[in-house]
Amino acid sequence: QVQLVESGGGLVQPGGSLRLSCVPSESIYSIDKLGWYRRAPGKRRELVASITSGGDTNYDDSVEDRFTISKDNAKNTVYLQMNSLKPEDTAVYYCHAALIPRMGWQPHDYWGQGTQVTVSS
Image 1 (tube, rainbow, N blue to C red):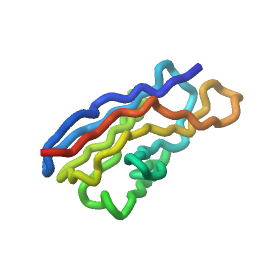
Image 2: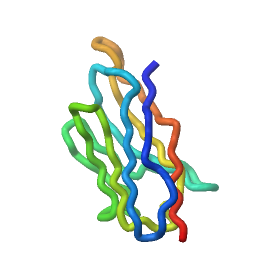
Image 3: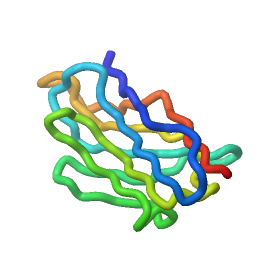
Image 4: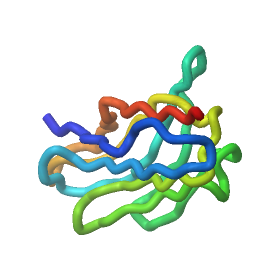
């Protein structure tokens, strides 16, 4: 069973930066779309940013110009560079991938276990 392994969360002061990383636990056939979601306390999970296999990106308005999603195709890794962090960015961040684990398989959605990001002074 493929798992998405996240890293890079933590505690940072307002205005600081963090970079999240996410990589599948084993080799896979192909990736269609990658994204980062977050769930703040008492709120629904929301899309933060996504990137397609062709490199097209999409951002929530609240993070536009502060966050950057990118991917390393050779490593099957997706990153979320978060700059100018605000207390309202505090949440558990989840990696999402729509991928095909093996040739001939149907695409499936996979989720990471979540990594906590806390922005506080």
